[in-house]
Image 1: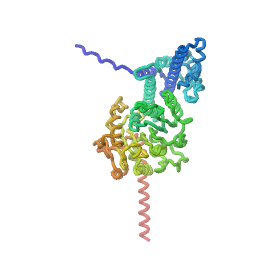
Image 2: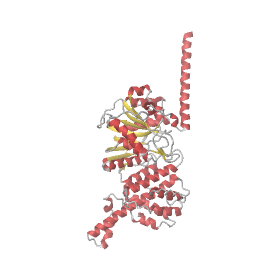
Image 3: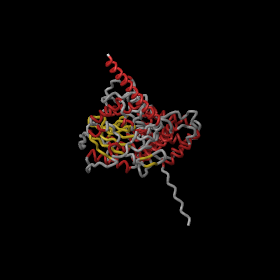
Image 4: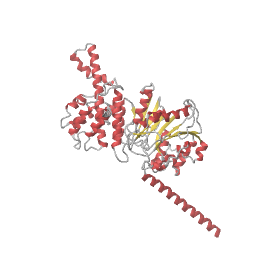
Length: 523
């Protein structure tokens, strides 16, 4: 008897769209094509929202007995749209018009014109939308086919998850796929995988207050925070969002992403460096949530000498120093009862060089380090190295939490996660709940916390001191220690070379001291 063929897995809407869009990429680099596709997704979405509001308005006017010849005056009244949080879309920027000229050679110029018109009519989008659809290097036939493809998405059509979720799934899936396709050191830097963001948010629980991300990328931390609030019965307006982003194109991407979700965010008037041009100097946030760039080589500027952010010591000027510059930047921007959760390279847990070790020790002794979580490798699109999550709190016995003074929770989650490809692993919802659950049981004393051998241990300050303030969870929970070989090989060589040269220097100093003392004996 013939075996029945396995049914092929059904592709999701976002998978189907991505595969079709990727085929149309042609010779475009993913970093460039990203803006082409996501710009059109944005244009289609706001046009759909506009047309939906227009249809509703028309039905309302008809019910009121407005004569057909007077309808157009009301239907073109921009206040009827903006008062309902709908962007005003001029006639030549509406998707119906764009679709009608999709097969014409000047389709690129028509899209550029549409972006210009929308920005002029909506101040919050000024300087944000992508241009250059009319450039010579962009195949206009493929561009027209891409317009047709994106035209097939009905963003305001109701499905099982609601219209906003259709848009969110498509947009986030495309961001993730582009991050996976790009190559080079900075590939994927604009995007933190959803499972990492979700874990941070589930542990921080930003129900209400000011949320800040000074390395905002495409805005994923804010999107997930807003979804968390909504899922727990709150409103998106329960949180105020503040962010900053260094790369101009990514800053624009974040503005588009947040506008699509209806999230009002203060991202500053432009892109800027959070260290040398802090756009929110007076902000003290209830929650800081971030995935800052790892091991930045050229972050230092002489103007940062003596900066008030360096409470625990001036960070070293090299790559490792940038990690502790970020940590102190986060802490500086916390409100008196605020909590921060962020991603750091594993080397920051063990680095014993100069001021980096001094800063880490100061953080522990000042009793603001709440929890350290070692994560599995391969969680990020742009690097296979393992990373850790840090949680620091300015008021560890306030906010209704059980006092946990003089104690740090260590969680070793390296064995969790599921491979979804050879190079990429994801954390499942069960993984996220396992990590977040034990953290909340410890912090809030929910149901009584107990150490779990090989997974979680609450360590006292004196135990951490015995380990020379190294914060690798494996040292405390009873599993093999996570080694620093999680660093890329070139960075490991550079670090070990620097440490070796430092030992040579100390050897020379010791030799000079011996010579000096021997000389004194001869006199």
